[in-house]
Structures are given as C-alpha cells and as structure tokens.
Image 1 (tube, rainbow, N blue to C red):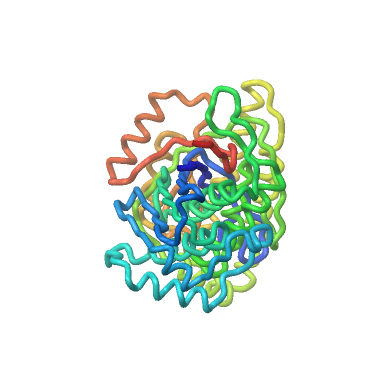
Image 2 (image 1 turned 90 degrees about the horizontal axis):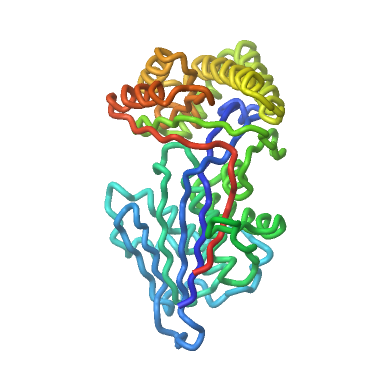
Length: 389
C-alpha cells in the first residue's frame, strides 16, 4: 500500500481574541503540538469497485468505514475533477453526508464528531474520489479547548490527501528529521481545501486557524487580511487546559451584547486591544541579540499579555478556572492570559528564557493540583510538514 503522512500544528491567540470580531487586529501563532494524519491507499490494480474508505480516530478509539460503492452512489466518482480549484460543500452534499452518518454508531457523548466526519468525507471524496483507503488521525492537542484542533485536523488531512493525489509535491526531509515541508504555492492549495473543511465543521470560520496551521510562524489578522510575522527569538509558553468546556458562539454573542449596551466604553476596550495587538506584532519581530535585550523584549510581551487579559475580563469572558490559573502563576511572578474564546478552555503563561526550571516545575505542579493539565510549547514554529511512507 502507498503511505502518506502529514502533521499540522495547533495554534494560540497571543492577543486580540473577541476584539477581532469588532475590527481589531489579532495575533495568532503556531505551537509545537501537532495533529498527525496518515493515509494508506490500495494500488490502482486492486480497485475493482469493492473496498472501503476507513478513518481511524485514534484518540477517541473509534473507527468508521464506508463501502466505496455506497460513496459512489452519493458523490459519484469525482476524483481529481477540480482538485486545484477547491469549492464549498453544497447544501445537498451536507444533507447526503448527514444521512450517511445517521447510519453510524456515534456515541451520544461524542456526537460532535459528526461535523469532523463530514469534513473528512468531503475532503477525501473531493480530492481522491472513492478510491479504497484508510486514514489514521491522532493528535497531541486537547479537543475543543481553543488550540485549533479542528483546523490542524483539516490541514493535516488535506496535506496527506493532496500529496496522495499528486496535486502537491512535498520537499525532501530536513536534515536530522523525517519531516519535510511544502512549497508556498502548494501550501496555498492545502490552506484553501482546509478552509472548506473548517467551514463544514464551524459554519463561518475566520480562516485564521487553518492559515496558522498551514503556514506556521505568527500571523497578524485584521478585517480579513493576514500579515505574516517573523519572530527573531524563540518564545516559550506554558499552556494550561482548564478542562472546562465553553460555548464559543454564546461567548462571542455576549461580547456583542455588552458592546450594544455600553457602546462608548466597549469601543474604548476594542481600541485598546487593537493597540496591544499592533504593538505586540512589532515587538515579536524585533531582534534581541543578548540576554539583556531578550529579557527586555519578554518583559514587554508580558505587560501586553497582562493588559490584554484585563480587557478580556472587561468583556466578560473570563472564568473562575481561568482566574485560578492567573492567581497561581502570579505567585511566581509569571504573567498569564486566556487564549481563544475564554469561559474556560486554555490559558497561556509566558516562560521567560531565564526562568529556573525549579520555578517552572513548582508552578506546573500547583496548577495541576487543581485538576488542570499543562503543556510546555514553543511558539511560532513550522506549519504543515510531510513524511512519505
């Protein structure tokens, strides 16, 4: 069997969440936690109309399979017909996939998987048609915690599928690693397909999550426009997953309602967040060549994060679990802010380059004593990568 593997990173919002909906700039960055998609296809000689398309969602312990003949009835055999021109999923296709999934035994507590399975079916059949094959997806990212897990799913899957279709040509692996990258033009195509997957999962996504997962590094996003940022110094964060679920749509709506009740005050809040995002964008690109300069840069980033968190509290999107993390890290003179929708989810804590490991260990231990889970990550790294075999 032919084998293709791709991995795509998750993301964090360094500044600007919620305010971005109201015209502010936001800054997002890739992190070195990945979703891996591996794809195994049967040789063309074995295609006789039989076989199945299977997806193994390794982190959930669930496997789903559809006979190729049944998929041809629903989608036709459209492999490669418009692989270089991604198009949105039609309402008829969504309805057809919903009927297919009604026949699957999806556990009640995992019914949210239906949207991801729909995205899988659409991407697979649009790019490869109904050729028999098996995909295995596993992730380092906590699901539904605001770290871009659905975008990393769509990006890694699109990358593997397009490589299998011969529509993109991965570069050779980097020295000392099995992973190689893609040319910019190929990444653009992957990003377009991944965005179609994100639309199936989320309805009206901004596109920032799949862009960061595809291209990596850091991105400033404002009013639909993306600007790539290049961080000249490594940035490390401690991410705390509070394990508290949240309703993103309700939180976004709550901010809008507050803005309608207090238009002048909230306009000032949004304007202040925009200033923070713009300044943070400039700071991350500044070169710092020695310990003094690096420390000064990190202190400015910490201050901006602290101010942004205060403004997010003004918007009403914090949570008692988030505040617990803030109080804990403050005891160790560390600065934290929520990332994403808030109301639970994840919290970022900046790790200064000169912070002793003993302090970081104490901080992590105390945070996790509250039932939370912590990850240490590097910020602003590589985007989509590929490995053959």
